[in-house]
Length: 301
Image 1 (cartoon, one colour):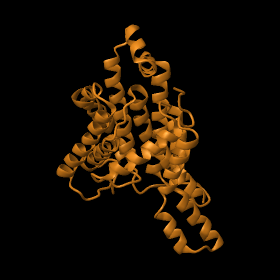
Image 2 (cartoon, one colour):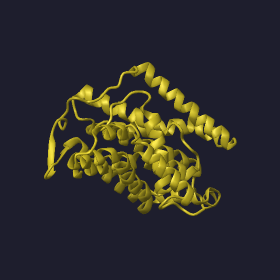
Image 3 (cartoon, helix red, strand yellow):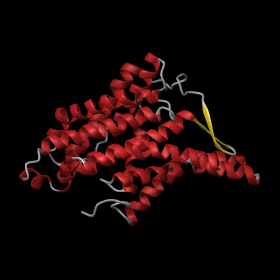
Image 4 (cartoon, helix red, strand yellow):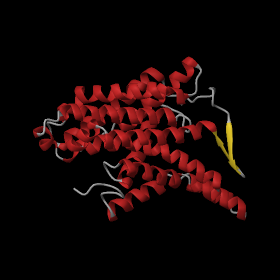
């Protein structure tokens, strides 16, 4: 049970980082990025290629994934998104949906359809004993720790730097921010760059939990939307807390599995429960939309 909870929390930290990239973009620009999962998929491939080319753990591909994600976010903003902002909301939705299909099929063409994962590296195969019966892979511990560092860095950027304050001002009132001399166009592009860099890093970290293939983005787009809705759009702390909650919700079958083994439960029922593990996340998403639409930590508009 303790091992399942720990694994859920570590995975949840990475999920929170995935959601953080989405909440930065939505918080600044109020635009829904349906291609967010494909940004993550590209970050996963960046970590994979770093590991296979240099023989390192994908954790060492974080800088590469961050740079690739940042460049991708900037390119997508100037190449597509800034034109979509001139049109109605439906154009923005279909535009980012088209971007999702484009990135997915490019990845399919280049990387193929087979799932790929990392089987060698400096940290791969090593475990750490946290307590009685709690043995966690070092790569997953490192992924959780690095996610915390990324959250801390982004909080510092948003709360303690001029760039972060300019991004916040643009999010609160873009017109007033322009009157104050803030280059809102540049802030919008920076939001996409930071969002891409954040989810790119999350992809490199997530490679320690999941294999990568071109369609993996769809699942994590849905998880990211549920996580952001739970934590609140535009909230860094909300993304972190909601990520932990989502990690635990997805691991409910594993926790029940451990509990069932203790009490001699029916293994068939446990197996069926694993097939519906994402249903707990979507149920939480539905409840938060009904009873608290702005999320646990979201702004009041």
